[in-house]
Amino acid sequence: MNTLRIRQNLTRQGKALHVLHHLLKEEFSHLLDGRPENVSYEEMALQELMRQIASERLDLKAMLGAKPGKDVRLADSLDQFDESEREAIMDLAQQVDDIEQICARQAEKNRTLALALYDQSSSLIKYLHEQVKPKNTTAYAANGRFASAPKGAPLVSGRL
Image (cartoon, rainbow, N blue to C red; front, side, top):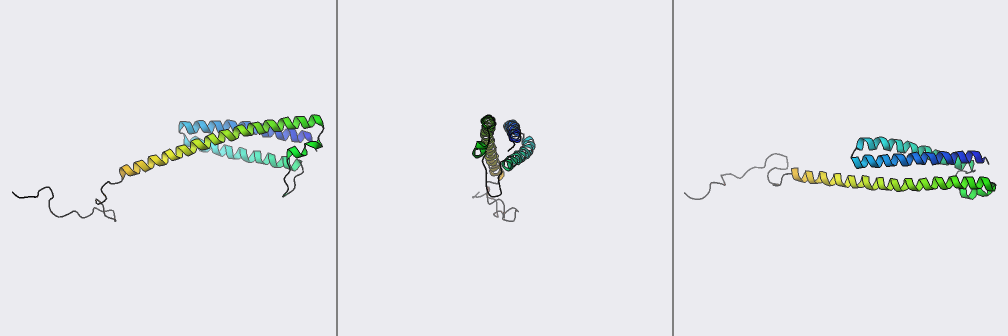
């Protein structure tokens, strides 16, 4: 098994995850600043980067000898390497795992903020709709026209 290729793959994954973390922080700042148009650009970049990271992981699994329907873990394959290579690979894998956990926490913060903003917007729209909707439901008929008003002048009633 080519340990150089495995280390290069893990290094690329680590660097990609650092970029992912940077993009997630940028997306969070756009969410805080209320710039949804910038969030959508960030989201496109995030999705493409995630696709590339997934491709790197598939390549790593192929290097480890994964077959369709049978998953292979890096930790299970470490006994094939000598001690120095094993240690270098384990260090790189730990770095990848650490930055992946950081990215997961940042993604959760982004998700929470996005849902909170969505709830806030929904509540505001509902409130505005309630303010615009006529209070007197007898003012309009079902067809959207004024309902027929009662005959006579209600203000002038009584005897003179």
